[in-house]
Length: 284
Length: 310
Image (cartoon, rainbow over all chains, first blue to last red; front, side, top):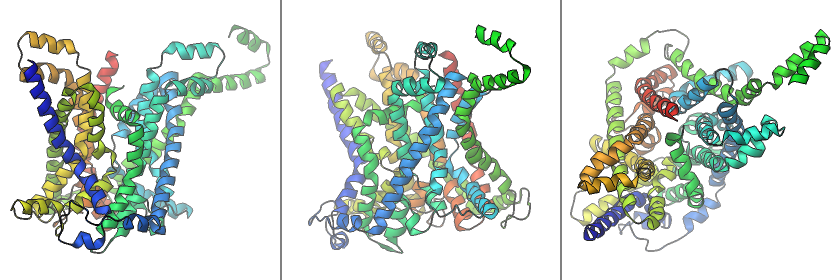
């Protein structure tokens, strides 16, 4: 029995190492390439090893105004979207899970259903809607980075509301009844009791909203085109890939730096990240 | 409550109307409605309205001035590319989801097998593909698949093999986009299944072991039935996301070679934005709706059923 178990353990480790290699090769290769000069990349040497490591690519990108503009746009958009998402979804989740009004149960289900509508179905009608809006009011929405502040919440709010409903529902009823008896209003109950108690859920939802806005690719690709309005994913792809000349050292550096914020958040708040990931299917 | 009612009786009718208005404003359901109002506005204006609007757009001609009924759809049915896109979308989504589920299940088991102390570390490492924004990791794959500098081909050449045209010909390009999709999605399944595995009571395995069940029987008769729900719901979620996927195909192949790797999302972008034919693009993307609806209905059924149980 115990010999069986040691072998099972060895096999487990063996396959885990294999899968870890499969899962980690692309990011590691990004790092390897980012440390190379263009000359070394195009030389016929072993691509899996850095013979003359250099930080040239990093210095070049971090001093290039264009890349910093992309980074700033991404950061501003993501931070604002997180704020907007929380302001919309937390009160709504509270209302839907605790206060009940006419049609609230249907709305809760509807929120979940909207989460299942993919952005690839909506980008064309939205594009046309913005064009019509421009004709009617003269306000140009397309090709401004702040248009993303309007469209990204459609991706984040439904899911965040849904997981906050789950977290709020798990708070015992006695707690808000006690608060109401003590004379607290509904808003007070939400701010002083529900938000502190459901803080883990709030953090998970915040992380979700941030990573989704940081990674979104289709909307910025469809709605922004000028170089100074682009966010990172689109910026790297359209500006660093010039015609057929691929400067892979810089592309990999840019991609790695672009992947850094979510990776750092994940490294420090892994448990919250995973809680948010699994909440969608296990709660509710 | 009682003294409020007594006081209300004493005042004049005009004042009563005002208090009743104020009382309505203070009523629980009214406050709740106003708290949910931003959500309702957002969803109806930027999700439901465009969804319905795309139905309307799909019935217009290219310049969006004339109503053509089902003209766009009948035109699509005559295009060979369209049928290729239908076929490729299905192959892409179904193969990728099956392999994601299989790999996720296997890896979750291995992680579950090792001592609890090391599990956190492995889990953390194996989820990295899911954390990196897809646009960024697709660039890394694109570079790994580069026609002249592919690092994979270098390894293959080391063992004396011929270079593989990863994104160069139809079959390999289809293989590559599916491989990348599996790479991104499998960790998500792994995390979901790992959470489900943890929730299977240990006593069931002990009972099975006493009855002399082999490891295969333990998986088949204990683990799978206990995890059935989570397996189904994760696969349905993933089917929706994969079927509507845009980033991977767009970055890896942009639909090429000769449109053979296009899926609905990328082709509708090509037609609608790049080809400036929004109605036709909208018609293409609407073909995603049937499969999405089926998946959504099953997910919803599962969720309402669990809601009733609790």
